[in-house]
Length: 136
Image (cartoon, rainbow, N blue to C red; front, side):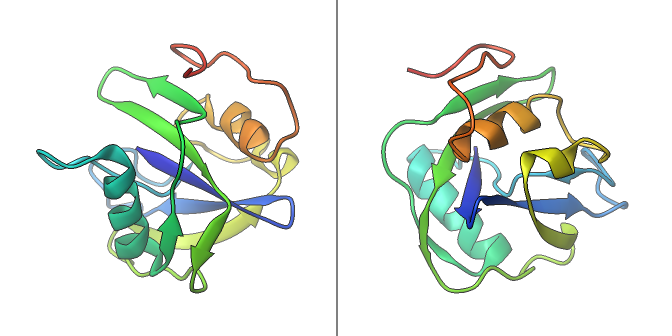
């Protein structure tokens, strides 16, 4: 699961370190895996704390879902958190950036669904289909 942190019309993206085994050297959304017995929203709160040093408020249903060969990721729009996002996991990411949808066009992205998910989280479009469609 991943979160789109939204502030001032921009989304926080993380650049995955080039030495990462999975999806190295690409821009992505912060998040990670749900541990056994863990609620997905609680997992996202934990992952955002570990990766960005923020205490996020994750409510409601995911706004989208990405299905790839090696993972399934629910996507939440995150509009409220405590703390200023920093790179608290330098072994995972080597950069953070607040980006608008237009900024994504020239970047290497972890998945082609990311621009649509960012657009949706920023409220710039109606729900668009992703690999599996919009989550209810």
